[in-house]
Picture 1 (spheres, one colour):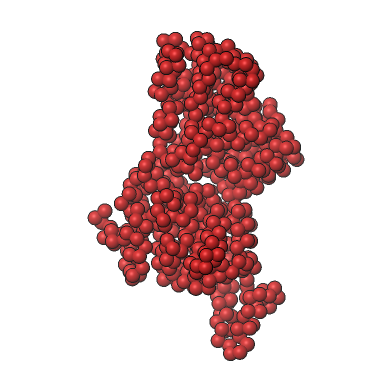
Picture 2 (cartoon, rainbow, N blue to C red; picture 1 turned 30 degrees about the horizontal axis):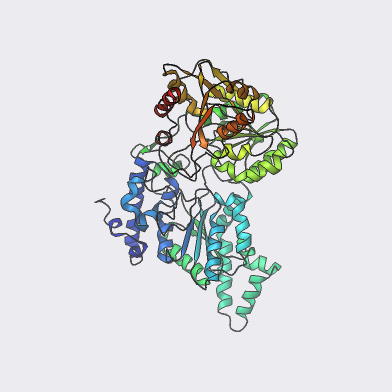
Length: 618
C-alpha cells in the first residue's frame, strides 16, 4: 500500500470532495493499479470496474452519499465504490469466505443501499427510494447507475415508464460502453449508438435552450411549450430523445473519463430536482491494455498474470463448452433446433453454435422472461428451442415457464448451466433453487448429468424422447477426473448392488464423491445415481422400499428438493424404514470456494464417508 500515496488518504467520500483535478487524476491511476493488483489475486470483475473509476469518483463528489441513495445495477462494477467507502484495507478478502462481497451488500456498509447481483433492477429500487424521500418530506436525491447491457432487460423499461412523470428527485446514469458480458444486441443498443454518433443534435438542442433562456418575455414560454409539445417544430429544433419522451431531462453523451465534464453534468442533473437521465460513455477495461482489447475475457476472471495478461479462464472442456459443441453437432443434423441465450453467448458455450447456425441463434439481451416466452413461441411453431441460461438467472423466468410453456405442454429445453453451488459470487448467484421451483410446475422433466457422456445422452433424451418443458442441469466447470464404471445414463437411474441394510442416493456432480465414499465401506451400501431426477421413477421407488435405511445427498435447498419429494413418495407407499437427507439449508449461501462450501454442508467425500459409517453402524 506504500505506493498509493493519495489513495491512502481516502477513507470516506468526504476525503475526495476537496481534491483538485490533477490530484484526482493521480487518484484514478492509483485506483486502477490497486484494482489490477488485487483482482489478479482474488479474481472478480475487472473490466467493468476499470471503466467506471472516474464515474464513481464524480458520483461521490456530486452526491452526498450515503444520505443520497446510490444504487448500482448488477453491482459487479462497485469495486471503486467500495474502495472509497472505507473498505480499501479489506479488499484482499474480496469474494473470499468471510470477506468482502463482490457485489453491493447493505450489511457490509451503509453506502451500499441495495443488495444486487442480477441486472435491470436499479431504476425500480432508486425510484422507490425517491418516492420514500418524497413521502418523508426529504429533498435527498436517488441515483441509479445502469449499464447499457442491463438496459436490454425489460424491468428497466417498466421502471422508466413509471418514474419519468413522477417529478421526483431522481437521476438515472447510463454507463454506455457497448458491452455487457457478451456484446450488446438489439434495437436499443443501436439507438444508443445513434445518439453517440450524432452529438450535433444535442449541441443544437443546448444552443436553442440557451437562446430561449436569454430571450426576454417570450423565451421561457416558448421553451416550456417546446419541452411539453409533440409538434414538428420540436422534432426539428429540439431533437428530443426517447428518454425525454418518457419525462426525463436528458444530458449527454458525456465523456465518462473526463472528471470536470462529468461533475458539471451530474450537478446540472442533481439541481433539477426532477427525473434526469445522464448518458455517460466509458471504455470497459480502461487503463489495462489486455482488458481494453478483450473486455469479455476480463469481465469476470479467476485470477491472471498482470504482465502477460493471461487470465485464469474456465477450461476449454467445461460443461458449458461441451454443451455448446453437442448442441451445434445436433443442429447440424436437425434444422428445427434453435439456440437461445440472454446475453450469455460465451458463458453458456454457444459461441460455435452462433457462428455455425446464425439464422437459428438468438441472443435476446439480458431478458430471461422474454427468452422463455420466445422459446415457447418457437416451440408452438414446431421448432426445438434450447434456452441456455445460468440457474440463478432462470428463476427470473418462472412465470413464463409456467404460464407460457408448461400449461400448453410446449416442448422447450432449458440448458441450466451453473446448477448447484458456484462459489465466490455468493448469495445472488448460487444455482441451488431451480430444482425446487421447477418440480412445482406440472409436466416439467429434469435431467442432471454428472459427466460429458451423460450430458450428451440426456440432452438427446430431452430433445427427442421427452415432452413438455425439459431441463438439463449441469454444474460450473469440468467433469470429474475419475469415471465410474457401471453407469447407465440412458436409464432414469443407475444402480450398484450392496447391502440391503442401507441405500445411498444422489445425483449430479456430488455422486462422484458418494461413489468412493460408499465403496470404501467394509459393507458397501447399495448405490443409486439419479439421471432423470424428476419426475421420480416408479421403479426407483419400488426398489428403495426394500432397504432398511436410506440416505440421500443433494446439492440443492431442502424445501422442494428431490429428497423431500422422494421421502413423501416412500411414505405414501408405506415405507417403514429410516430416511435421512443431507441437503443445503433453506438459506442464502454466502460466498466461498465450492469445495469449502460442500465440506461445510457435509456434501464432500470425507463427510459422506463418515455419514455412511454412522448409518451402517446404527
